[in-house]
Length: 69
Image (cartoon, rainbow, N blue to C red; front, top):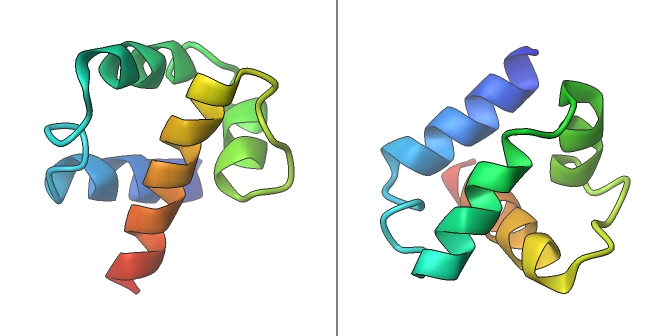
């Protein structure tokens, strides 16, 4: 999915991953194991992850994408 690629690559390219704490990096990697449709729902803000730590990382990815526009 192009939207997913754009958001995730943008986050990585702008150093977002580098700014994450170790536990947040683990959550980011766990997000990558989600089915693309669910991950897109998270990143588009249509669904909120039940786990607050995962939701925190999703919010950081979303904020980085919004700052880039």
